[in-house]
Amino acid sequence: MQIEPQAFGRVLSSMCTEPHPKARDAAERFLATNPGDPGTYPNVAALEDDAIAMLGEIAGLDEPSGYVASGGTEANVQAVRIARNRAETRTPNVVVSESAHFSFQKATDVLGVELRIVPTDDAFRADLEAVRSCVDRETALVVGIAGTTEYGRVDPIPELGEIAASVDALLHVDAAWGGFVLPFTDHEWNFSHAPVDTMAIDPHKMGQAAVPAGGLLVRSADLLDELAVDTPYLESTSQATLTGTRSGAGVASAVAAMAELWPDGYRSQYVRSQHNAEWLADALEKRGYEVVDPALPLVAADVPRSTFDALRAEGWRISRTGTGELRVVCMPHVTRKMLASFIGDLDRLEVRASVPLVSDD
Figure 1: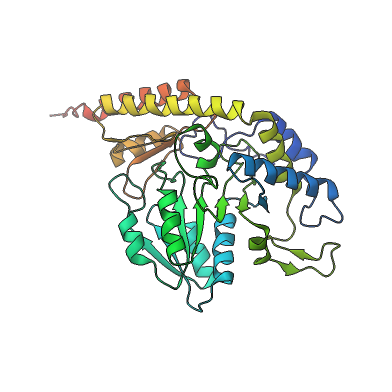
Figure 2: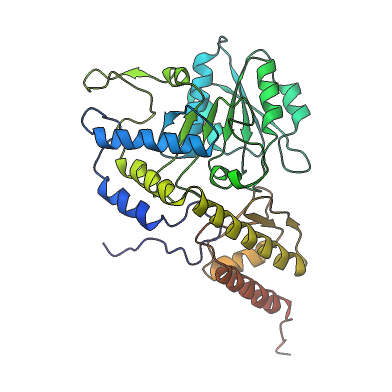
């Protein structure tokens, strides 16, 4: 095979990163194991228990249940599925803000659940009054985002929990990206801060595990029972995961990364990433761009489309928000040197664009 994987030297908008060396090694060693068949592969099944215990510690949950999923999308689908299966109505709905990940569109479409989307406020967080006016007795799930994919914002999770409780709905928190940085901030986002029922939290993002290694956490084991199906030909009697066969690579790499980095390594990583985001935001503001304040290590700025396209042509792997801003995620592989090089290219391209063409006349 001639094609090589994408190098990370110019990747600025991905929410995945290079795995920690110990996570990479663990993924390779457990690649052929299947935690979906714990009777045959008890070692990786035990590692999955360790992974859930570690994720619970990170997310403020004393007695966690859950499993290592393929990523935030699967975890979000499963949260909607739990809520739908628990709902007493035949026409359940799920309430999310417009900042929610597109996986909720997939989830509600596949599961036949109504999706209600409410606006965000001026701070790009879920508008609480809009949520209150949207929920009703058929609301099965209210969703809060702890680290939005476009602006890195954290919804008011405790208040969303109160709204969910007022209509006897579950509360799901999508912390797929933010879950490994928020423990080092003052945000209220986890199980110890609010009556959170389910959570998506991904080791393969800021957790530095190998892809795929997502996480679904539930407050109580009976919530997982809503997902269980019989597995008559396996030694285990039932299975709650969305997929059947799963590689143990994600499980093992998640445990290896968290064992190595939690908490001090992740704290240092957050501080470095946040400082990089603030440096980039300041550099862009000094050049006249309007920048969304980076509450977490994510920067959005109104760089013109022509400049954005020119930067992509230079090899920078960047993306845009839904409303068109440049979006840079300061993942662990993003260094200050990378960002300085990016700004240097931006300056050069802007100068080139500002020089008038010389006529041949």
